[in-house]
Image (cartoon, rainbow, N blue to C red; front, side, top):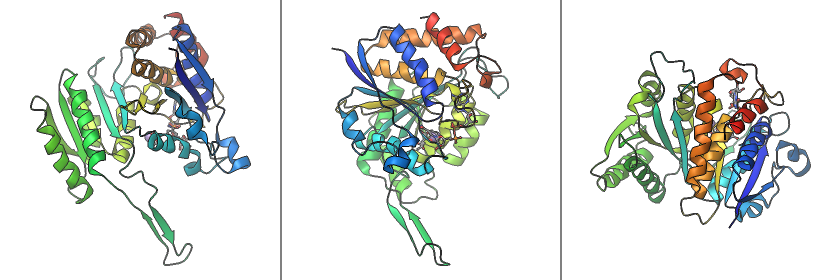
Length: 347
Ligand code: NAD
Ligand code: IPM
Ligand code: MN
């Protein structure tokens, strides 16, 4: 049966990079139907949101969603523009955010003495709760007594399932090592509970090594010795921040793909580059489309077409090794579409 894929290019460089992923989908002849949704920050002036009110219902019947990026501060407040992204993660219970960072051949790193594949880690980021809640409020706005509260919540179910997912991921990898990142020396309710649950889950996986690390040390170690990480498990906000670091030490944000998974498959999963809408280069064909293409490969793998996904990754690696067709983030002069065409030609 043909897979039903929703394409949601969004704002800024989103449409430019999704166009390249679309070429890849066509080239590999994936048995699918694609439906494009033209939702972005321009809708804000008309409807006060950046996606139609029933957009979750419109997307519910799809097998997967491929998102470009959201955000255009000239057209909509930033926190309104990214709401649809957060709503998809929560409403479709996409509780696992998988963010691999691999130093691929032909890709430069700002770190010295690191060779291809020296860095090969994956962050399993909690994606539905933690610091990313809409609980809280502002009081006495504009007065001297003004107060803002932003409330975090961590549930036993939410913490347990993400830590378990990380251990299951480690089981399939060579190093079999989970690093759990918290700030439990300070956040004495939420992250002390996280640590307790970690111990409980770890007891079910005697063959998996695990390490506890504070987020400040993790930020340092991702620069100092990224090769020592295998599987990272982190809360929503910590995972967000740390994966920009792991992206930059493996070549840059233009390479980082990600998957927002609902492992039950009862609702659609969503695939998107880690990067944002990059307003500084939008509309100029300067964006690196590899993050979007890698996200597309992750989508195809999740749909069950593992061989096709491998072919796409192999074509990207061949393209990188050749090192000729490059967008400006890699020191080249080529256009987004030329990078996409070069990868497609290798498929
Ligand atoms: P950003 O990722 O958009 O840009 C940061 C820097 O990285 C910029 O210099 C940009 O030019 C560069 N960059 C990003 N993607 C690139 C690519 N594919 N190729 C080459 N260079 C690339 O982050 P930001 O500037 O903090 O945010 C801009 C907007 O995007 C904001 O509205 C923010 O809220 C939004 N945002 C959205 C997402 C998402 O949709 N998933 C993620 C992050 C940020
Ligand atoms: C990301 C982004 C989002 C996040 C924003 C745009 C809501 O930074 O996917 O990394 O914080 O999760
Ligand atoms: Mn981010």
